[in-house]
Every structure is written in C-alpha cells, then in structure tokens.
Length: 474
Ligand SMILES: Nc1nc2c(ncn2[C@@H]2O[C@H](COP(=O)(O)OP(=O)(O)O)[C@@H](O)[C@H]2O)c(=O)[nH]1
Ligand SMILES: [Mg+2]
Image (tube, rainbow, N blue to C red; front, side):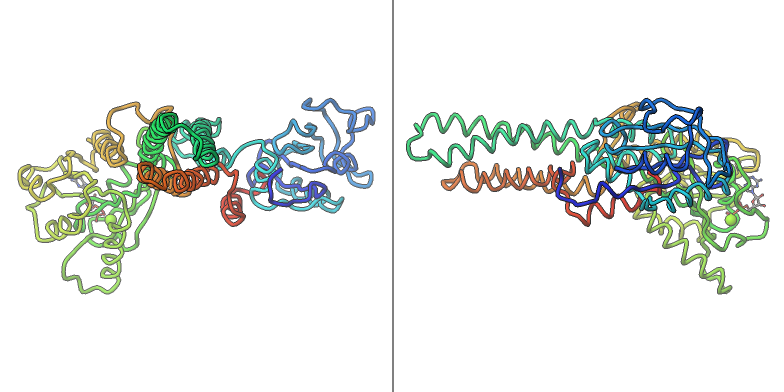
C-alpha cells in the first residue's frame, strides 16, 4: 500500500500496559500468525480452538506452558482488517503481575513472535492505512497529555480534525493543479478569454487555500503549548520565597524551604496544570550579585540559563523588604522575556514595596499579591500566569482552544510553512508570461508538503523518528 516495506508474516508482540503490578496487564500480538501463536499457549474453555473464537468477543482462557497453567486470562481476537493495526491481532489480558507478564511474553516470543519495537503497532496501523501520520502523532500526544485541554486537543486530532482540513486543502489544490496542467496541454488552441477566466478562478482558490494554511499555522503556538507545556522559571533574589511559591502552586512540599538564603542550589522542575494549560515550573537558585560561594555561583548561572530557555517567568519579589540591587538584577535578566507575572510575596507582612516601583521594574508583567506562607493568592497567581501563557500562544479569550483544531508539532508546522511559501510563489508567478509551467511546479510543491504532513509521502527517517518516540506496545 505504501512504499515502506515490512513483513506482514512477521508477527510482533509486546506488553501494552505500564510496568509494575496492576489489576490487569495486556499483551498484544499483531501479524499473520498472531492467532496461531497465541493458540499454542492459550486454551479456551472446552478446548475450543482459538481460531474459532468470534472476533472482538472476549473469552476466558488459560495461559499455559507444557501443561503447567500460568494464569487465567481474557483473550480477544481481531481479524484483519478490522483491528488497530489492520492485521490479525490478539489481545491477552493477564493478571498484571510483573512476573506473570514477563513470563507470558517470554513464552509468546519463544513460540515465534518478535518483540515489537516502540511504536511498531501504530506504525503498522499507519502503513495499513488505518490512520494518517497526523493521527499517529495525535495518539502519542493523547497518551502523554497532562491536562484536560491537552487531552481534548490530541483527541480532536486523533479523530481526524486536522487531517480533514489538510485533505480539503489538498483536494482543492489538486483541482487547481489539474486546471493548470490542462492549460499547459492546450495552451495554443485555448480561447484567450476562457484561459483568463480559468486563471482568475485558480488564483482565487489558491488565495483561499493560503488563508487556510495561515490560519492553521496560527494555531501552532497553542497546539505546542498544550502538547509540551510552557517552561516557567521562578526568578527572584535569595529568600524571596521562590521555593515556597513552587510548593504552594504545586500543592506539595516539593522544594526545600529554609530561612537560610541560598538553599536552592540546583534547578528543580515539576509539572503544573493551570486549569488545562500545562506548565513546567522551574525553581532556581536565587539571583544574587557578587556571591563568592562557587556552588551558589553555579546555581545562579543555571538560573540565568533557565530563564533564557523558558517561555515565561514568575518574578518573585519579597514585599516585606525594600527593593534591592538583586531585584534589579532579576528585572534585568527578565527584560527580554515579555511573558511573565510578578508574584509580590510575603503579603502577610507589612509592605515595604510600593506597587508603582514594582510596575516600573517589571513593566510588562501583571502583578499578583501572594503569601506563600499563608497560602493566599495562589489562585490569582495561577490565573494570571495562565492568561499570560495563552496570550503568548495567540489565544485571546476563554474557550478558544477548547475543541479547536490545532497544529501540534514542529514537523506539521514545517510542512505548512513550506506549503504557504509554495502557494505564495505560485501567486507571484500567476501574472507572469511563463505562468502555467512555474505555477504548476509550485502547486506540486505545495501538494507535496501537504502530502508529507499527512504522511502520504513522508520520508523514511521522518517515520522512524516519529514512531520510535512511542511507547513499546503502542
Ligand atoms: N512571612 C512570610 N515568609 C515567607 C513567605 N514565603 C516564604 N517565606 C519564608 O522566606 C524564607 C525563604 O523562603 P524560600 O521559599 O526558601 O525562598 P527562596 O530562597 O526564594 O527559594 C523561608 O523562611 C520561608 O518560610 C511568605 O509569604 N510570608
Ligand atoms: Mg529556594
């Protein structure tokens, strides 16, 4: 079906559930011999042959080896092409003990199955036309999704939301290309007026397609935000309360808090769910000018780098003390970071910081008053941060990402950028004398890039990179 070769007779097997003890653990086999291999180890009640089992009906069975029973299992047979991979598939639900699972898989492999590579089931599903490359990526994203919004976005893509848009674009552009190629063939005898009408119709279609491609590209920041989460660095002078705020936002005692300045020497990262928007909070050593302790110096250097490598910042200011050079150093480091919020901490103590001074130090950041000690203001801080992150991703109001079709990977973005560039060039040559030939060439280029995005024409190394990042058994 597609050019990538694989041997369907090569039957693969893997544990599809996570490591460690669980109520059940699932082993999945896929390939021509999936049923016969499983049949050699799994016996149904009344010794009914596994091959006679009605597809997609679970049946109780015994997993055994040379007459010794290993486990009582539930077995389900899926017949090609009505399975996840499009091949014959058998799923065996064992009791999820690590030793049971290991032994069962060993026996299946000894019977002749090959241990599946990461993502190999999904890759077969893709190669057999069960899903396109965007959907395969979405599946991996769904499994990794850390928040509700990320789940919804990945699910929308997995169900074909983005693939449909790409397909519509392609079919419209294929129509335009067909017209352009027809014009190439009959350029001599085509009536001038007819040709002109055709060209303007084609130009209009290309303009519409270009607008659609740009609209999709505009969603990629939000798509990447939901997929990867935003890195948010807590920055502030020693003892401002960065680690306390991290703990407050996470709702756990993750970081060590002491009255001693300079306790946090390493950077520490933890995932945070900002009402559906995933973030990774990074706690750093306090930024202090002129520290002589080499370990602390190293920490400060890390903090600098962490700020550079992050998407946004929380500038933590101790409101109970006068602003210092250290606060100004922090502000200087954050100057190039337009996305951020100020946490005006220790608001339980008498304030010695004028709100105006904070605003002039961090002019682009909204200010949230908090007390990490008392736990006050954490919801406001989280809300302000969420809004800043969404605004940075080009999402204005509430609900705009919920259920929207979002572009979610650098790969997809790159394909769309190439499509847009080719369409722009096509429009630019559309008025010229040599129009038809160049125009058709650019249209083909645009179509190729869209085809690559959906995986119709994706190169082997791209496929390898995508599927090898999947979990084993998926
Ligand atoms: N009164 C008061 N003390 C706080 C607050 N937040 C943190 N502290 C204290 O300030 C000290 C330094 O806190 P820590 O989180 O380690 O600061 P860091 O160096 O910025 O990570 C600790 O003694 C905390 O208990 C707050 O909101 N109010
Ligand atoms: Mg700290």
